[in-house]
Length: 296
Image (cartoon, rainbow, N blue to C red; front, side, top):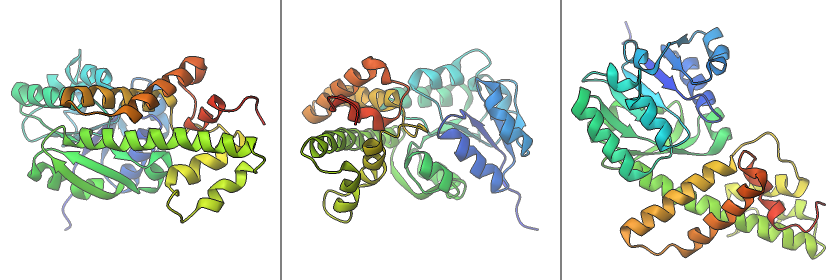
């Protein structure tokens, strides 16, 4: 008989977490869920996933616990708060965190969790957006012990096209910071160039096609430029607030390391300005509105 699949738990069914959990369930893994808004579990529970009453209860049912949450404080609360994972976790279990967090906080939480209950931590933030989450083509950058990374590699193969071990716990988060710096700066300059093209009399809808395959090409260009040109801001693929949070993490990490990151610092301020204009919950494609005098 083939070996049985490990039992998994997943907490955080947002834009990324919901399709990722769905892929794991479709792959045949026994799956247990928890989400702060319980209604987000309904579709997957109807498909066979089990819903736990608390994060702590996930530890009774799963070998590997996965998180995909909004920020560092959300993860800290779920792991160490009332009825949190730390209350019932045990040695031999693994926590795999797909969230984008502060590297130093990740290292601190991982050390505390292992000291308290023996559970080890793998930080495995992802890149590829909701389209990558749906297709299972995410890029996954992981920090943790080699044996822990290899243990979860067959599981994460259902979520990503590539899993790269970056180093010790926290290293995955450093790699994600670098990723987000590039994405954010790229998105802002795409908005800037598209607005310039429109003002100069060029059809912005043709820009992504014209630049495809050249040195200026990128996935953000091909995704964002057409949406910006058409002012097509729904459905939301990337929240402005998420990228702003990650840029703030980048600036903080740079300060801690004594590294100069002036472009990313400016990007953070431009993203903050856009968010302050009521766009925090909106899609990244709305950045075009920073540069247009009037909507097309």
